[in-house]
Image 1 (cartoon, one colour):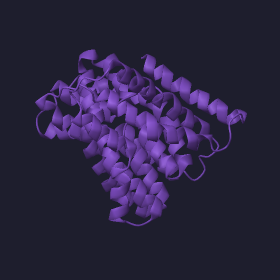
Image 2 (cartoon, rainbow, N blue to C red; image 1 turned 90 degrees about the vertical axis):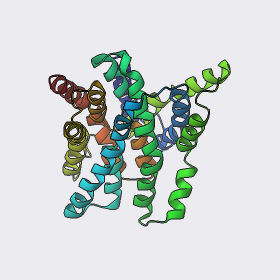
Image 3 (cartoon, rainbow, N blue to C red; image 1 turned 135 degrees about the vertical axis):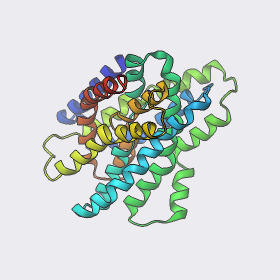
Length: 301
């Protein structure tokens, strides 16, 4: 669980830096820019290299896409009912729609299910969360920030989105040997993702900014930690595969806290950053409890 401890420490470091005034006010923008343009692409290049996929994993890999679709179906009418701004809608869709299936999800899989299932966790993260973020996530961010649907703008943002380019490149070169020095460079750059992304979130986190956001925060975390995994559980129940170990990993991954990459994108597009950082700051520690409860429940089914 060392990765979980790292997440909490980096979040705290960012929080202290924000309170201390030692960094300029726009430091979170600079940190987020590095994450999107360097660390996320490097993480894709690292994780996708030499990945082998079992044929019965594809439904599990589709679960993040299904979760995002359900979030859209739920949040759009809720937002219309409460009269929320498009920035708030975008923030909720990005931060509640995507779970942290890698930097929280993989350590949780290792701790609860065993290291033999890490390969499945990687497939869910890369072909589910990561690819969906690069296509659907960047589309949501573009539409909610600009206020209109411009297909040319959306497509341009997708094809020029560095993580999307990295995923395409990684898939195309999946089984090609790489020089050791390239692997070392990619690994080093990918390792900056968690510290810098969480530092950016912690830097912006202010616990005095709950006012006017409690309902949206409750809906967002409620969906992310409770509704999303319940929906995938129901899906596997309906098709009669709930007892399959693959289904249990998929449900566990869907119960993870908000995805760091999606959160950074929401902040970069100015989609209510205060709500975004509150969801991360509360979602990570809360998920330690809810994910354990989910795992206890599904292993008894």
